[in-house]
Image (cartoon, rainbow, N blue to C red; front, side, top):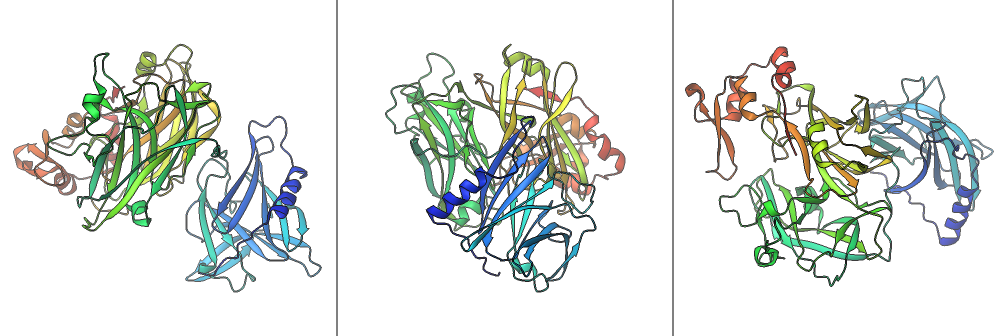
Length: 566
């Protein structure tokens, strides 16, 4: 790949650049529902942009060597072909101009076709020493079908720093994933204190391991503090590749007489063990269900907004459970690496205690996706029955969400309905990518009141794999979940999901009974009735005995009422 030149500023140049941005011509209108600036370091690209919801315009600032040509584009996928692209070059007199174009790829060769409609507009160019600061804008949505729509979907940013359009090849491009219309996460504060949980271990050879370790903070906290940020730590690239997700739970006493020290102290900061798929469970996971943090594959650091934090240090005997999903599809025997979390906390308490709960379709093999299918939709919900049971009269305020499915997930949409049956989207991503799962801040906090519903819709494509796909814990299985950050915290409110019963779902396919076989390294569901399917795995029966036609595909999730769990 062609080496991209990194633009490096010394402190003086950065001050000048910052002053330029402060006096820029294009400012947000006071009527904007949301308006913000973001700066991201994407490889060698230092990209800054402003989002203005009143005008529905996005304005970009690119810093580049003087007179250097560059191009930037946007796409729904990592495929360069047909990407929306704007190329910036210079006239002979040194002034800059833009070309709104579309990328076309033929093997390794790349060509650009100028759009009939030119929708990117050059605002200003400022020369400072050896650098140009190029400022241009475009409406979120245009009438040009070649233009990428700017919305809450994931965008693939295509970056080209090359001297000539004519000689560009596929290798000259860099591609980055980003949510352009999402507000930036609050940044780390140097005054924050830290607590680290880190475990270096040899990874089991089984394809899917949920490994649990118990942790007691080695901190001398004599009063309540707030955890306000989380950073995932990996010892090497192998750790990043083979870690599917990390969940941090707080262990809560089940009664006033519960002896936390006797239950957890001998396990604290030890080797840990399998969380669930084990015949002799050593880790008392059922006492540790209060969600505190979730990281999923490709996720970045997360810091809470300034008005919320997770309480820590409320008692002397506080214990936490770290659940790490190790993914080892090739059953490698030589995987050794470290994974952990760094928590940032402060004794300056925020206004509210934060909480976290899970919603969507329950993790169950009753979630069934037909083989070689496209755009299959599964939905789960947090029903009004549950919100009336748990949510206080004053309601709760949702400020962030993480949408989560596995490798067949393509579109994720979280909806909110109130008692007036009014339905609106909380957050969505129709360009969902498994390898870029982010905890995303909402533009505006969403009030969830008693009697309201949350509906999680997930769309899947299984054309890339053989066989039926089930809901489950493996990366090759599927999930349909959203993790919701909110305040004020509600005790014992950790999950609000729905799903069909496995029994009623399988009866539609003539399967009367199944059992979970734990005799093997990888536990499997085995059919016991009817007799003609007996002793065969559920996977085998569904793959080879079931005929998937359009009728049973469309009716699968309309055949029975979903059961609520909260």
